[in-house]
Image (cartoon, rainbow, N blue to C red; front, side, top):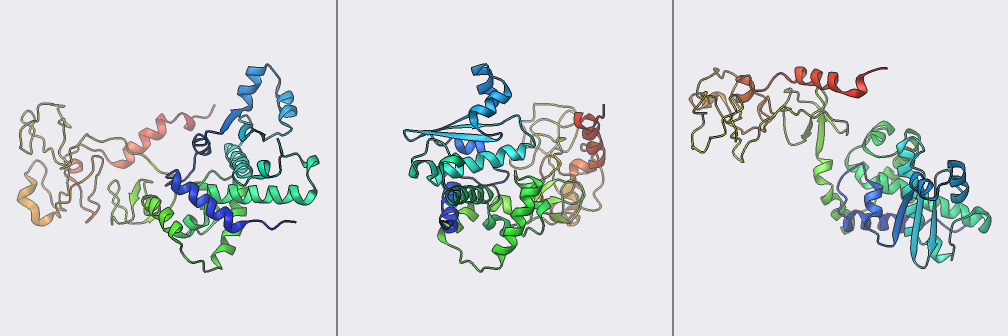
Length: 341
């Protein structure tokens, strides 16, 4: 059997990352296909409706329950089963088919499709293994997993569009990868530079808010422990601020006439700047009188706590932002997925 081109596949995928400016996980495989003008992706459900055929007829047409790629005159038509579950299986299938295309399996072997009956056992096995390796590296690249300090398959499943089983297989191969001391190439550096913001972003272990690793405290709940996972909680309660963290509209009375240079709303007297208030900030008192108790760090619009020193923010002290637990409970109550029928 022909040797699997591991080095070439890794190089090819990193080129795709750089050329398409891929900088985070999970990867949207359909977005990748949209960048190749010679590729057209059609779902099973769309083709079934257009051709007025049944599901079983569609599988017979494609000769596969998952996907099929037709090659003709340097153009590729990819059919994929959008009705199959889980969604991660669809992602893997499409990444696998892209692997066949990018690795020249159809063009180089002059095949209109990859049928097992039209290839020797060794040729078919080689092509499938190369396409599988391509899909695995595309959806969760070892270079990025190493920088994220991945410790188990569950973390891989959370950050990528890999199924639980595929994540277990990926983690097994990743552990083998770590045993080798590969040198960082210039192409590697380009990829890592693109992924820098993603790699250096963590999730608060307490409230689930996404935060940069350079911060010391979570701006939502004041926690100081973070971990690299992709499930996150979005805290929507916030106010539009300018670059100096000053409210554009008064967060209390909704006065829009704030063109003056002052720090207070001329209608209700609310302090308009969200920043570190200091541990002993007195409500409704000018924070500048207490700058010794505050690091004066400007805060984001939904920040209850200073990310530098952990003190409460002015908006939280003045009760313009409610406790994160209250907002979290409201979101969970309104989440339609939380209802059991």
